[in-house]
Length: 298
Ligand code: GRG
Image (tube, rainbow, N blue to C red; front, side, top):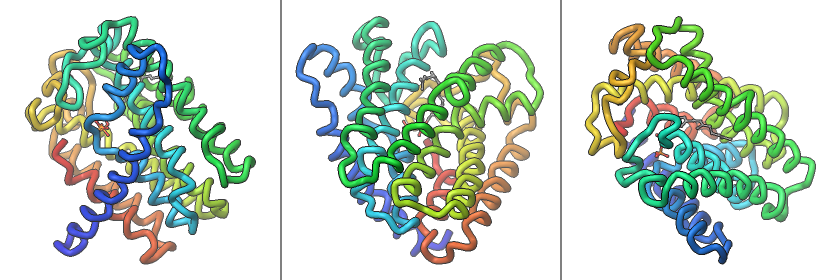
């Protein structure tokens, strides 16, 4: 990527991230129980690249919408993502002590509170869309709600996580691995992109192009995540590195090797960018975000 483009992306990402962080800081309005609020905000407010909300805002903009109107949905996406990380880190699942450079939620507040803080964030996500998105036509919010529920639930993250857990300690075929990645990771990235466009009232053809873009970046994102688990250290990742090898997880690097995995990720990003070719210059932020996925180091 040219220096100028990289610089612009950093400025763009930073500006959007600041907007999202400000909205998230005000989102949890719960007063009692204070302990629950503390556990929710602990995981929601510190750290994270905020990639999903930024994708949502960028896609809303591309579709000609006002990003301000997509901000509650952007927060909802980060809430669902955060709750999935809290639950993923639990002893019953990946059993991790470190997340976003800090002790995991259950290490800080105990397992019961971590489960409940995750539950509360999931429910609040739907409230953000259905109850705090003034100015957006109800029909569009209904479509976003349905997409979000599918992406988070059994046909998305939950289903992907079930197959992921079931695959531990086994060598699964590439199709199973792709199923896991598409459900556990790509589904939420897909709805991040699609929801922004739906809020803007995008035409079906654009939604279809964005879906193709999103599925490709989603799969590439998880492949890069697998690669970083092998090549980066815990301090850079903010979570325990080398965990996949330790738990004998099937990953792209384990099945294909590092070089072939990198090639796969690059091909997917190329396909993602091709899907947005009809949008011309207006797609630049989403194209730059696609590049960011392969060049990121954490
Ligand atoms: C959603 C109802 C519901 C339940 C959750 C636990 C679970 C079911 C699913 C696990 C999903 C999971 C943890 C997938 C991994 C996705 C992934 C690559 C996360 C890392 O995302 P980054 O790098 O993290 O964007 P930051 O910290 O930057 O936000």
